[in-house]
Amino acid sequence: MRAAQVKAFGGPEVLATVELPDPVPGPGEVLIEVAHADTIFVETQVRTGLFRAHFPVEPPYVPGGGVAGTVTAVGAGVDAGWVGRRVTSFVTGSYAERVTAPVTAPTPVPDGLDLRTAAALVHDGVTAAGLLEHTAVGPGDRVLILGASGGMGTLLIQLARARGARVVATARGARKSALVRELGADAVVDVSEPDWVERARQALGRPEPTRVTEADTEATAGTTAEADTEAAAAAAAADVVLDGVGGELGLAAFPLTADGGRFSAHGAPSGGFAAVDAAEAERRGVTLFGIGDVQFGEAEVRRLTAHVLAEAAAGRLRPVIGARFPLTEAAAAHAAIEGRELVGKVVLDA
Figure 1: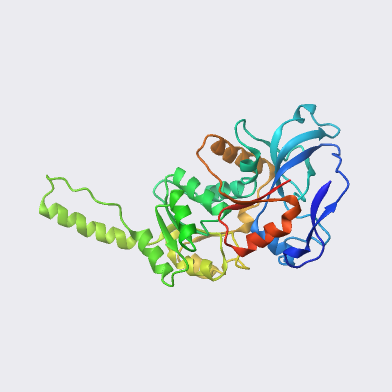
Figure 2: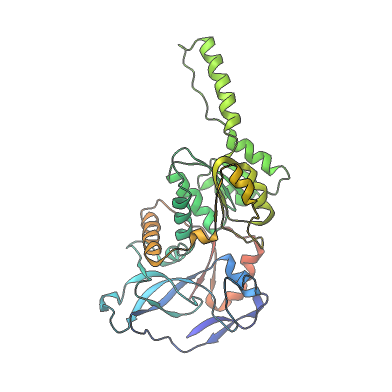
């Protein structure tokens, strides 16, 4: 079978197409014929040799961790009824035409949902849904999403809105800003503008219009106006900040978190997670979340996956696929991901 293999740590050019033996499902495993492989930014970072304490891989290796495809064979002890089922699954080495996985890993794809869309939800859908659960986003919450035009950010906008939150999304440039606005963000802030933090604060604090009836007296209207002013000042912060960018941008967003709010530093495409002062967070009553909070066990992965696949099948969740590449052009896919010009996901077609 064909696979994309990292020959050595380095740039996208170290990814090469190779022929490997077909995998055989062992006891308790299924064999999946891959239709599409998911990609995430951290795979490009691991390829360069970053984060080796967390991703202890050594070249040569096949990157990738998520697929959508069809079960074509099962190992000993596995119900033959799995054969022919369309599934998504976390796997090791997804940049390949065929992969094996424990039978506890796959999640069936609902009828009517195409496998490419399902593949775009493998990582980002699970993480986005889990993040919103952990940070307890609910009706009326003001949520600031950093990196909102990426694969997970585009899902976070939709899922947070579905929970009744008011969403302020950040993006870079007019094209990406237009996308996140189309997906339902209540306000969009362009982080390429030097005053983006103040713009975000203003967007978070913008009160809903107050309806005044003819029966309202001038005194009542005046009192309401004063109350609205005070409320707007108190509301100029986010109940929840979802930082999918990290680095200086993430650090700059931390002061936008309301006292008693929640701040999730789960993204590091900038090269590192936001280095938030834990003591300052404790002083302000801000609950901090990190990448460790979105590492889920198999049961949680299956539950969250089933949820986002069902939402997509019902038309309530739309993953954005910014580009597709054949498996043989995995190097070009990584170059495009690192170029940061694309929106949404990059998916490999096996």
